[in-house]
Length: 344
Image (cartoon, rainbow, N blue to C red; front, side):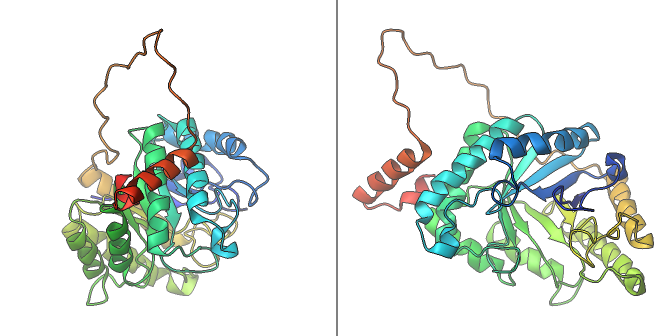
């Protein structure tokens, strides 16, 4: 059965519940890790800003999925200025590693980018061949900082996610992730344009990788349509439980409040619950938990290896930056005619 969650925005008025306990029973929260220039905070300061929230939710049994994207690290904006994506990937992955080291052991998972397969007001499109090295370098940095961390392929929103996934796979040789995030907006609970064929197509192409619905929802959660949205929630829940229970372990509704995105929230802009829509979502969460508590979907810990000690008389190993390591691997692979990114 899926573990349910909710999308939040700690940096937006109305983007959080008035009390942490309001989310009691949820299994996940998801939000963007924001830093300069989107917020007047460095990466370290943003870690300290989000830490109390993450720790409070963890005490309630709620895990956090952090979105790491252009709002986390803007760099020199290669998507806008045409500068080096290779340099950006190195700097972005270093930021990912720094964040992961800070939150190690706090039940935090990481989603690399958000809706990068389709440009929008809130999303930066990244061509798949360009996204591949960014994803690979970021995944390596996160796993080096915490081998138990879960890495999720940034939520795909276009109508043909398999095409984007395949292009990334062709570049890398494999997908260096623990799960694939999808945003099946516009998909009906049943029928040819339904959510099941959509998920089944991705599953057929990537049978060993779980699919996380890191966003799903309705853009018109207004009083005249509460009954419609309530029905939609129940049908999606039924479809996932009956046909996708082992395929989709996580489903995170978008979003908590209209203060985040007008019309999408299960509460209004003042955090007041929207009648049956609010109660139905929490009811479905509790029913799923009671019927079949979902197992842990974070990766199992790697075997503990004894530390490697260096003899006192040996020459100290040189220290390299992310950029130097990426450059060295890239040049070595090119020298022997291999795809440089399949090494990550």
